[in-house]
Amino acid sequence: MLSNEEPADTVILNELDLLGNLLADYEEEHHPMLAPTLADMLKYRMAEMSLTQDGVAKLLGISQSRVSQYLTGKSEPPMKVARAMSRELNIDAGIILGVG
Image (cartoon, rainbow, N blue to C red):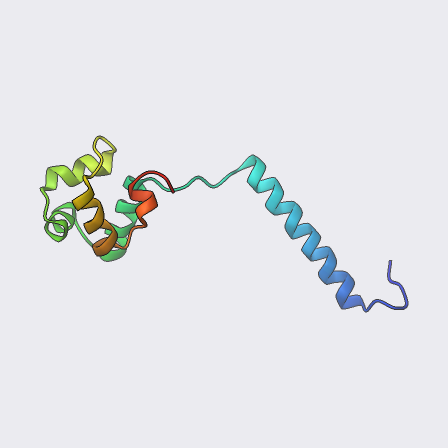
């Protein structure tokens, strides 16, 4: 209920803030957002940059079959390729290394 000292806008904002926090807590507990994998980020960047597997291969200086292995999670990039992915595709190093 409203007190004589507190404006209605403040009460509504406080209630919305409380509901937002409750919703965030519920989502975090029941539907946590997992960190993307390297394959996820590669697919996302390929779509975003309109690149094919061959285009990614040329950009990174590797074979198309190696890109395919990264996209399926069958292989992890060596440090030189990881640096190129970070630089050329703007993928966070933590995601490339599987720690973020």
